[in-house]
Length: 287
Picture 1 (cartoon, rainbow, N blue to C red):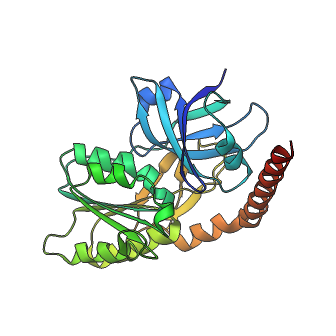
Picture 2 (picture 1 turned 135 degrees about the horizontal axis):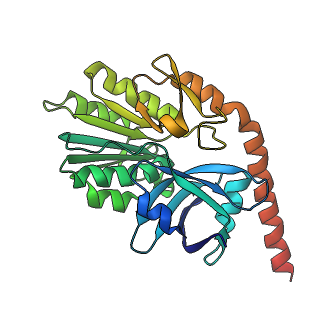
């Protein structure tokens, strides 16, 4: 029967939010966990997506993703009432949530999606919460209103200054680290290079920094080894040991290199999907 799409929202040019019927996952999911999505029952690609939110009462989960390759484009083309064949989850280790004191949650780009449930849980646990949210420009911002609603302090940054402060997220993060009362915990989620420099920003201050990794992943159960990363000189598997790790111990350079292995194929698939979309629009206008 599959999992029915209850709601679809276009958050940005190539960022889609789907609310999907998945009662068993919604009941068990905790912040920080993810699902493996397979569109069809054939040998289609399996992709990991973080659970951005869940409603156990309605039996739904929320997925937010960027259309990058063929599968995410096909997923983004689905409409309300369509179904996703398979959802496996919740997977991964949930975020350790407790009252730390002052927690700073840093999100970059699409990283705001997995960060949101973590930030909300940290605030509900009694922490003072500062959220730093960044994007390249105003049009690429997601969940800024939702983040603002749960934060005690909200700092918005864009690379071009089109919204909030013209700065990288590491700039206000450094200022907070230099303050008299430095953060007790930093959680940073976003592009790998952003998480790397967030960790480097907090390292001199010895502030615990947690990052959530989104690596190449196939089965999500630790069998394939595709998601392996080096953490503190040891091989770990993101799907079962993570996705969260000590940012000061992650070998980001090795991870970034591995993530680029299929970049050329992703770019080709991305371009092909856009060409097909343009062709379909032309055909529709002709008729």
